[in-house]
Image 1 (cartoon, rainbow, N blue to C red):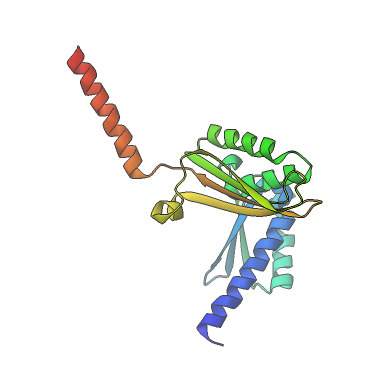
Image 2 (cartoon, one colour):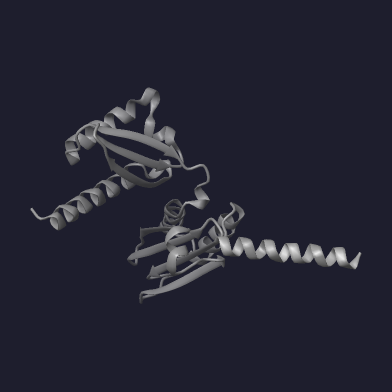
Length: 210
């Protein structure tokens, strides 16, 4: 098997594990899973808002999960680590899931998205954008609508390094609605320096006035 085919096979395998984790730990405020292969085994790091649901009493659920990963995905010696996401409104995957659940309950998408925009900014984000696409609000045709608050980098190095991205599908009666969330948690250094310079100039002007 060529190196390219090996990478493709591993990518599909990891995608299957991600979907499995997402479904299994939905109640735990699941975000994502990272997989690292080491000399001791395969380290699997699960990021959730409520780690207790994943770990279980005395770590019982971790042992069960380890056996499931061995049998279902043929992972030898899985080393499972659970990381807590302390602020769920700053995690794009968790936020996207919150929106999807609300839509599935029949809550109006505009009301949901505007509420989420406010909560994410209150949590300390620099900016957030939400895109919902599908048959919205009883529409017979698929369409999309975007919501944004604050500053978001849409391209370039900042978009890759500073923007957290999440996507999930909500199962609605008219059809599937895709929810894409982008959260910018930190400002670019240039913006910080610019703000600092503006502040320093303002302070100098005040001193001159006095």
